[in-house]
Amino acid sequence: MKYISTRSNQTALPSEAVLKGIASDGGLFVPEIFPSVPLSTLVHKSYQDLCFEIMSPYFDEFPEEELVSYIQQAYAKFLSPRVTPTVSFDSYHLLELFHGPTLAFKDVALSMLPHLMTGSASIQGVKDEIVVLTATSGDTGKAALEGFSDVKGTRVVVFYPKDGVSTIQKKQMTTQKGDNVHVVAIDGNFDDAQNGVKSIFSDKEFNETLKKKNHLLSSANSINIGRLVPQIVYYFASYSQAVQENQISLGDPINFVVPTGNFGNILAGYYAKQMGLPIKKLICASNENNVLYDFFATGKYNKNRPFILTSSPSMDILISSNFERLLYHVSQGDSQFINDAMKDLSTKGTYEVTPSMKKAIDEDFFGGYCTEEETGATIQKIYGQFGYVLDPHTAVAVKVYDDYVKETGDDTHSVILSTASPFKFTKSVYEAIFGSSSEDDIALISKLAKKTDLIIPADLLQMCESDDRHTSVCGKEDMKNCVNEILS
Ligand SMILES: *Cc1c(COP(=O)(O)O)cnc(C)c1O
Image 1: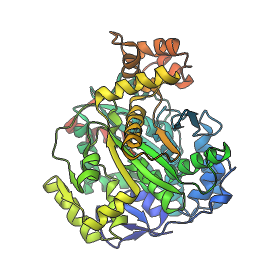
Image 2: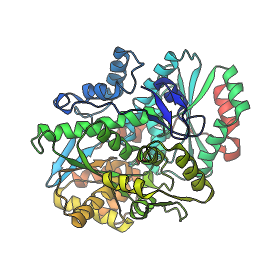
Image 3: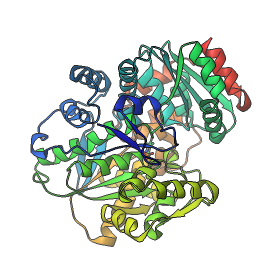
Image 4: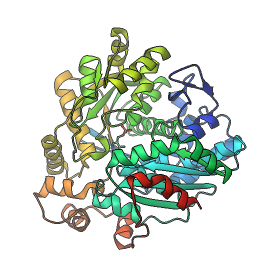
């Protein structure tokens, strides 16, 4: 397998693509071809076996027994035997992606990435310690800490905005265990944290100094191909479960509804379709930051709009980075177009696709969005009807699915991706169902459990009882020094 940059004809082997994360021309790595997998051989496989079938052609440089061992280690931490089970009630089928250690779907990929990175380093003969730097608005940071914690040959440093993450997200990070993990609060907002990390990455001199001390900087963000590929697996797993449970027959078409921010999750669904999974529509669900909804309506991507803080913060995004990969595929690899579009996006905040690209996108995708008020109402409605508690991100997807069915009359079997446990966003969920409360997220954990008969996840209980281990705060101008201190 070779990966090619979206912005030139630069190529990379799997191990190079994983270590680099982003191509040196600023483009994202995409697979040169999509391996096809025969559907009939996939049904009745365990998640781990399915994962091996899907991932091995993308990482064909890795010895098979290595990959098998990565997969075993990565998914041993998941609390469901199916890893990502689909639960059904009425015509709703929810693919629960939150049974990993941090209660959100990013665990699926971030449990795997550290192994792919250390494996890649070994293939490339890199002996340096890999230092993963991440700025987080909440979910990614914790999932990266958990994924890299005590993985040999790695270190992870997470910066989060001091007042810009939820109480639970903050507590999850400050109580993180592991000898190779570092968590630092930034006196600033998420953009400050992200800009600080970016400027550290682009500081050649600093990188060379680190290199002399045998440290290699790397990133765990969602444009790394090592995060994208593991996400393809659960689309196949959910399809396979629907066949096993006689909800569909092998070969029948299926829709997936995906609560979307950076476009990584839904792009993995598009890759599954390219590999032969019979997906009819990928339904892209946005919150009030509905850049993608507007794109699907007009063919014009326009980020010039106010940034709205919502109850589904992991989807509060105006630049969906992984969308660049879709543009590459639907333009038949027109890297000139991508360069122009991305330049327009950074200078004017907007770009437009050609009619033929728009047509190709419309064949596979449908866009919808959900307001804040509708998000709460959907959590309340689904709890009232089925006694099932949705998190706000998943609620966005459920509402968009309802709208899709109303608008199109499409009754194809549809699976909604459920990306977080309701306990991760306790206050929004509690208030949507039981009305406003003066208590904070942490206090409401046990109340929500009691009133809804849900069991509090063990990791969360443990978190509530743990002391903070990471309390350092750093000025937004001071992040480089901070990294320096941590590493010396
Ligand atoms: C990251 C995240 C999303 C958005 O996924 P993308 O791959 O960025 O589109 C949705 N829900 C939750 C809970 C998340 O953490």
